[in-house]
Each structure stands twice: as structure tokens, then as C-alpha cells.
Length: 170
Image (tube, rainbow, N blue to C red; front, side):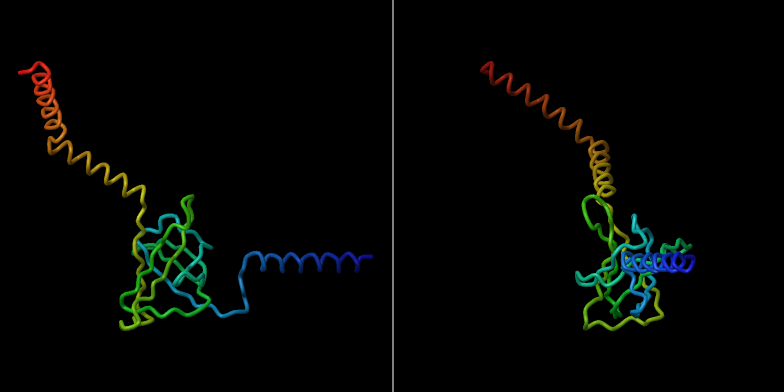
């Protein structure tokens, strides 16, 4: 009886381990290529987010570490990626509701390759809400400093005077 219960528990643990590996989509038997990318700000990128090259998912974000020179993002790739001098690595929104992914543009094939020892830097992501807020503040500041609103008020007052005189026939 004890052997049967032990064997049953062992089978349950094996099944649990198998399903954990399958659901995490990690392939422990395949070769992965590790790339370290440094960003000033990652704007909500998380471990486990996808990595795309030319629209194809090629890996996942493995680690995020804050260091004095920026945020170091550890990326595990299923295929090697050769970066040329005009490469660009950027964080893009995956949907309107949130979520991010890392997009790697390898650069033009005519450009020289970067050395494997060089620190790979990412492009600081743009947050549309922050940009819209800054633009609105700049417009408001320009309107206030340039006395544009005061000029518009004076112009509207003069237009009212002119239309009043026209309607009186003057």
C-alpha cells in the first residue's frame, strides 16, 4: 500500500513538473543566446515579455537590473542576432491596454558589425501620454508668454465693435 501511494505521488510530481515546463514555454534543451541591453528607462517592460526581430518572436526578457549607468535588460534569444553599427533596440507598446515588447532592428547589412564586447544600448521609449502632456504645457506656456490670448481678446473686442457699427449702418 505504501509503495503504491509513493509511486502515485511520484507520478503526480512528475506531471506537475512537466506541465510547469510546458506552460512556461521554456525550452531547457535548446541553445539560447544571451544579450545584455542597457536602457535609461524601460517604461514598464517586465520579465517574460517577448523579443521580436523583423516581426518574429525570437526570445524573452529574462532579467531587469537597475545599475548606475541605466537599466540592464537580460535577453534570452533562441537564435543569434548580428547587430550592425546602425542597429536600434527599442521598447514598444504591445497594445493600447498596456504591455510592452522589445524590438530589435539589426541594422543595414552593408554597415560594419559591432564587436561582441561592446555595450549594447537601447533607445529610450517614448510614452505618448507624457509627450501629449508636455506638448499641451508648451502650447499653454506659449499662449501665456506671447500674450496671444490677450491679443485674441482685443481682436474679438474690436470685431464686436465693427460688427455693431455695421449693423447700425455706420
